[in-house]
Length: 231
Image (cartoon, rainbow, N blue to C red; front, side, top):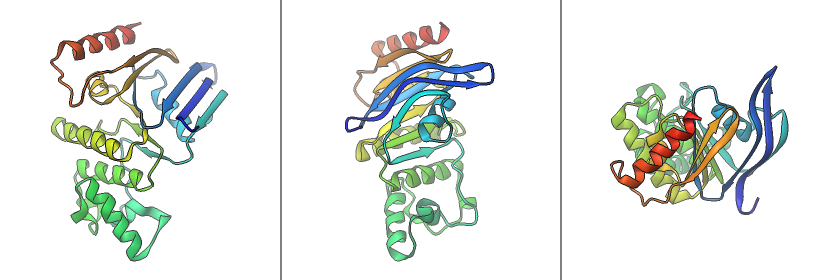
């Protein structure tokens, strides 16, 4: 796993008679930003949960970097714990843990919220705490399951910019699941298109960041993704 943070070979997942993933092969390199798109019910979240170790595949092999963090659409903060404690969870106590939590919160612009309660946060702020918690552990692999889905358009754009900045700073391998084609192309080094349990397309996005959504190259890639989703 020196060069890759995810390696799946012939991964299959079945629920009863329903085949969700079929002989799926996938690699994600260290420091690579990969986005997975697909129609509802194609197995995107199932694949992410298997990689996260939250579900088992029916057959096949999956190797994942030891240090892995997950951010879900719901940030899942503990209401009875202050914000800084939600960052460190059970990994530390005392002044040293507090300082480390504040440093992580500063990266997402929330250092001044460290001693507040989660109920005082906006939806965007709560999701940023979730990112701080994930990156506090310095993961080699960061898994993001539609983390911006509940945010308004303006907050979503800010969160996208923040994720790119944090990725550039920490350089984990990233797998992000989304329904939003434009979001995928704004963020990804590679866009994977999942359909009928198989990866139907693996598109390299060779565009400089920040990306111009009105450019001919961006929209040519967007049409490729739409065509693949339609197959």
